[in-house]
Length: 449
Image (cartoon, rainbow, N blue to C red; front, side):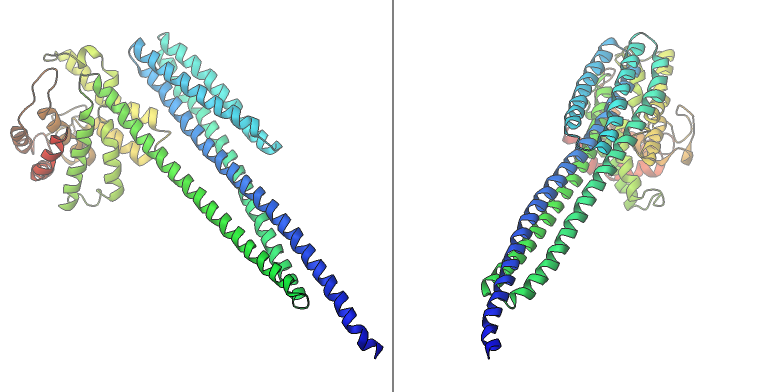
């Protein structure tokens, strides 16, 4: 009887102890989860920010390398001075970013990896200054050799070092994610224990447990949504970088076109004509085994680079208002092989191989003729790469309907007649007919410029 009387008191003591343990455990769990969640969010945010910064530095270093390459190819002091100023601004931006990141380095491993990037970057800029001095001093061949060997090696090393830093940051993110998952699993186990205890304690304990569970789920969902949002931001950033790279290529092509007194619209128009003619060829089933989606996309992207070799031709020839002499025309023809060489040397390390191959073929072959009377190699028929045959039609048509320093613009109808009549001699006869079949689309594009 006494034992039965003591049961309520014992149950009360048991319930009280269980309630105290549950409440204390939930309070500790809540505190730990808040700290872990805040730490996880901060670490993920810092890691993504560092990865974006590293991506920017990698892009800017490649841009600086391209500017140094342009400097070695420039044929005037004004152009070299312009490239030096742009390179100096870019160098200052990169070093400021590196200094900011250096100040925020928190671990020995990260500091070691970052130090490799930092020291190689400083060495690269030091060598770049030597290249500028050699190029400005007339040692263009030596400068070009340094650009394509020492500087390229530094760029490759810096890119590798940045990749190591990126891998380290990704590892930190993964470790933080694993830690968060373990914490959630521990919390889930604790939750189960608390629920078992709450079955014999006061309803308030059950209410607290349900509240904690709800908050845990909320934390998890919030962190997942934040991680997804920041991952999407990283993807969008990379897409913007690709767009910026394409705009840089088009801007460089426009700059070169401006040297022979063209407005730069030639690059945009010919790219649109290439796109329209490529679509027409695909609709007609012409060369479908080669004209894949990827090939067509790269062809349109590479079209602005067709006259990049003109950077190696003097202004006196490019801007001459009258007919070129035999010697001048021979020098002018060199822009095709020079263009292919420049694309391969300057852009070979920063663009995919298939794009470089198409761009080189366009630059070298857009003045070849179907009957073999073109230049620089005098190849004919289908030996001429398809991309160059398409570019030839677009380039000649735009040249006919555009005003140049040595001629007036030709009427559109007459230009189409010449394109049609030149099929089988100058142009691929199939492409010539296809181009004339899309006269309306071409005329519409021309009317917008």
